[in-house]
Length: 507
Image (tube, rainbow, N blue to C red; front, side, top):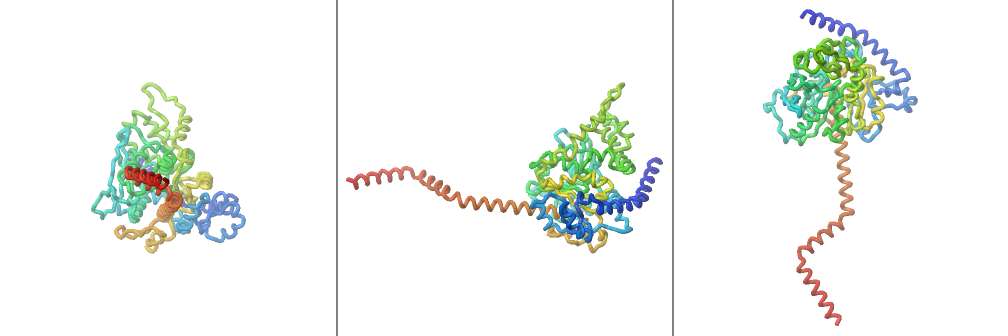
């Protein structure tokens, strides 16, 4: 017990001291990114939300430097991209915290959003889903505490918001605020819990791999069965984006999802597990995951090497012990090539392996100073957003990891800030301030839905016009044919009568 207390004190000390050095380091790196030659590769960040291309960078560099760089939308030019720039005002309305406040530190605001408790006026109703292999996953449906009816009717047309937490199963402050915001805007939030995560019983010896979407696919089918009339949207946080991107890539146009958002996603996950995090953060995350798995130590010993698992101090060693090594028979030693197994594992679980098959709009909200994801130039695949019309990137100067604190954070004046045409919050959920990233994703969902609805109406109108122009003769012919068939005897008699009359007239 004493060792755990010493370790906790050490982590707190690191968290309190290290951000001071990291803050000045991030400031110097940010200035270098803006002033150096690599700014065209990261897209010049201006407050208008436009992505300045390399060709425009030389002409508009002076004008861009005069403006306060806040956020940029990086994407391939398209009709949907133009629609988002026009109708999503939150995209260009981000003012990060600066100065000596703790919210200006990327690490502190990231730790705050991940670890600090949150008094949320939301309660959860759990559905345990038994999968095809008899494993269990859970869906936690968020409902207001004041609501007497704890179940939603299957005939409800309210959209469903599927929320995927990080790969460690931690329900963070950011996710609780997202559930509260989604409820106030008419969504039905449902949090997906993997096997053994967040109190979900482990009924099989199988754990869900990092990018295996099989369990999520069955959960989505259940949601479609329970709420067939409502649209389905998806949001993932941090490393949970690996599961969401894997699902969207494998399912393609059959994902049943209208649009998706990734908050502070980790894209290149193999390299992230290998060398992205500094050792204090790696140690803390590995410790949290081992604490969650300790209750299943005896059972897991039948399939994996638990001694290697609980003695590992890095995320890579932990992931290898869980999925790349098997328990050796008694009296023998394991001689598997863990390096080859590690590479094969990520060939099956890398989130971007089937990215070309994604068929819906996906928005990624990232910050350049994210201390969890790592350096922006090496961890964000900018070429994906510049070439794939389905992917959009909101890149901010500051914001940390799922933090995105603004100047008005914590003030009551910003509680009713503009969210564009998004529906007004319900009166029962209070008047707390909405996070900027949550405003952005709500506007993204609304804008993409309106855009595709307008496109569908245009197609239906064009098809109706084509039908009126070229189908009139065909319908008249079919009606005449039916009418003639109903009176075949009478028509035959008339034909004979006319024929006899013509003969008599000729004579």
